[in-house]
Length: 305
Length: 257
Image (tube, rainbow over all chains, first blue to last red; front, side):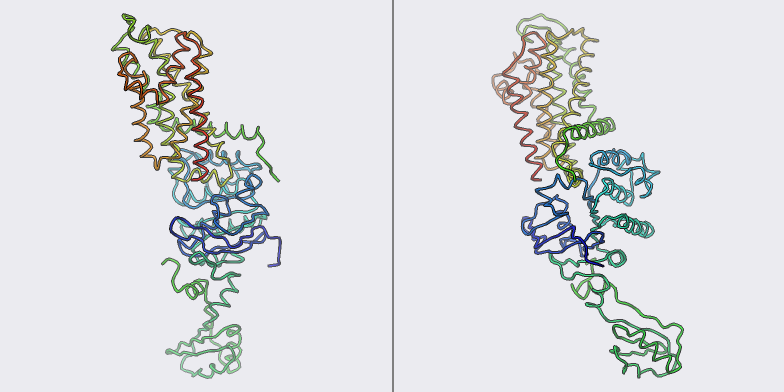
């Protein structure tokens, strides 16, 4: 990513609830047009962080600038420029889908055509249903549509795919990319590793109110979980010599199946060496570490724990 | 870049939200029962007990019973909106995160509360017309002595109770608690404010308790205008002061939630 205009700057954010420190010390910048992820377990401080961005909560320490403005003191100047989907927030039970969209469109300084959002987010056939009758997934999609109706420059999505079935999640991912392609900056709060890896330009791994790692998913993986595994079937031929190659750390052979542990360009090196010796396994492939491995390495636990 | 909210836009936002609130009210029949049916039912009970006899100068300020109760129940309609309907409604909004959603859209809190007051005015006016219509139809209750004074007293009363409702909605923890506290407050006020037994038969303790609660002043303000005693400025000032204090308290309380 080329360096671009900073639209969000968070410096040493701190937020304490009665007896617990929700956010200890969090700093990050988000550039215009980025999809920026906050990744972590429940209670890590992600939601508190974005609520401070949204101006819903007042920070106890540090400073926040959203589009150059203080979300607490200059809230009126930010009206309509930040769209928030909000986790776990209801609408009145008897409010209909179209009424909610029309209402929030009417409250925004400059609104998109809410009927288009209704179609884009698959709510057209539910337009006259009451909020109480919507499924979890339909509610999520309505909340995202509400976040987008003011045509915001920054969109904050907090656990938006929680409660969606796998097919709906993939549709949601495409729509998030579409939001960005239309020019908005996206802040995505999630505890789904695959979601962060697939969507985010940069990810901040949040643990106990602090950022323990920050960077592009690929860079994080390179840095914190660099080991690649190259796997293929060698039949009964001995391949112990592979251990002598650069970037190879170990070779294990269990029956006909060989696993080469290494890093960096290990796949290309192994492949070239095998071809050189006349071996052309058809199933040669690399198993890449994922953000899950990064998370496990950094925090010592899985995200669901 | 957007600057401060233009007054016209703000007014439009209040009206838009008011319209949505009215639609939501219509879809929630249980609250409609209390706001519309209960005062009429109570009027019927009082009418059956006391009838239209004006047989004594000792009761009902010297007027016929129904001429006394009809304007008093205008105030009761407003009180039921303020202490029963609004606290439960707003605690629900607070707990369910509806207010957070408005807040995230940076809709000022006074717009949300303003819409509650506006919706309360519309509903209270409908409820009062219903009470009057019933009183006229069944007991032949006639017209107010000073319609303008009645209207002003009624508006001040409704705004006062709506503000109290907003404040209770900010302070009470949950819709159930709000319902319980609201009903209790409503019935206590009902019995000591001249809306249950006429003031003349109440003990001095009841009168004193009543004087500390807003409904007695609302009843007097509307009744005086209706019966021809003119503007009750003391009662109106008390109601206006309570309205102001409760509004400021509510805005402050919601800011900190």
